[in-house]
Length: 518
Image (tube, rainbow, N blue to C red; front, side, top):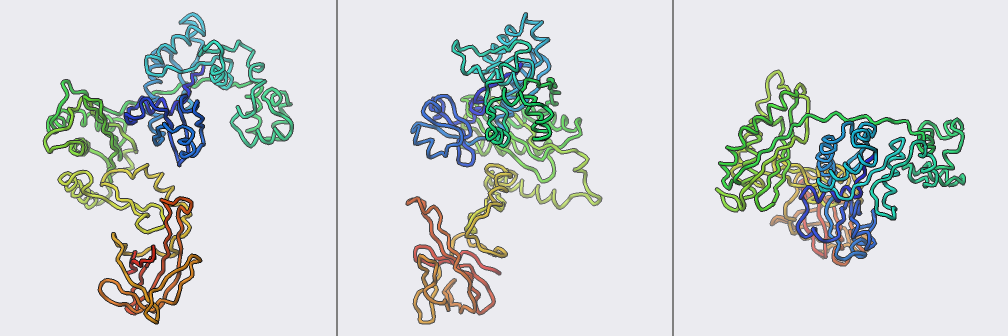
């Protein structure tokens, strides 16, 4: 028995409560890397499809609401669904968020048949807020999954399809090769004149293995309805997250932190019993108005109970309008460990870890006095201009989009960047300069990135500097197709007579100093 939840990223985003209020009734699409990753049924009826660029999707559906896709939300929202299933039927194997397999023999005997067991399961999912779930029952997981997906074409609106025992090959035979999820194999088989699972499954198994290898042999068994995989039930993980509900809701920070103290100690004790430490936690708070405050906090070593309490207090201070109270009383506080490590890997060194601990303690104390954004650290990112390659992140927080997204942006090619080592001093505000040639005329750069004359002097920081050498220009022509976002810049590296090197940029006929090589 395979349970499939269509459009699970959309369902998970709505269940998580992270979406803004303006997305409640509007067609919704989740976006990743500028493309639609998932959309709901109303957006599809307007022509929105997965893989569309956001601009094209909004052109097809002007009322479309968009939100960033977060895979963590998918997994976290699916965990209560798995727990709800396990309350009724043991032996659940999750394939991915929104898709899982269940051993059907026991439930069918208990509930009086496979269809009856599926009806009970769908009723439970309706209670959990997943009203459009589908179930397929067949001899193997692959055929059962395709049966669940085929419910979308049922004329009677049934959400259950049962494939009789031994009928899986006939059910799979007319399905296209794309069902296998192997694009390269499907393309090759199409060129050989094979377009359905039935035609592929009818080929001799030995010849398929010799021609397409082990992966082709596995795909051949699936196409032939000979999926011999059994359901491997998951082992429920140890519950390490803690939460506490306040009744009545509390509106004072000191009351909230005092009330959460035992929960913080229980959280750290649970980690210690499992031989784990956490270096990143997510704190979620819900007010009596339904508002949510969620933030991920990092620690250079590992969290103690006192550290967790500090983060709860700082997050409450960041969400408040005044120093001693909150905008809305809080009724729930939850702490979830995001990064878990073996405690043995974080033992103190031979001489302890005093300096790191003192630095962190000092910065954390300053942050508690100045607020969450009062202490920031610079994280290298990607970009063409130097200021674009720096992201200021509050101490103890993850960069926007996560560290993986920042690393991916940093590793992009970024044509137009300056080669060699980066300057040691980057001005927060570019310093206005004048660059002139030997005749005293201002140096310019034309559309072909050609310098009007060799620069000989430049004026910066209240003094004239003689140029001993220069290189460039390096030109950047960003978003040339967009009138509002078009950005054209030319940059020069110059060496003055005192031995200092400068990075100068020309934008809209105005020279500025972007950085200096000290």
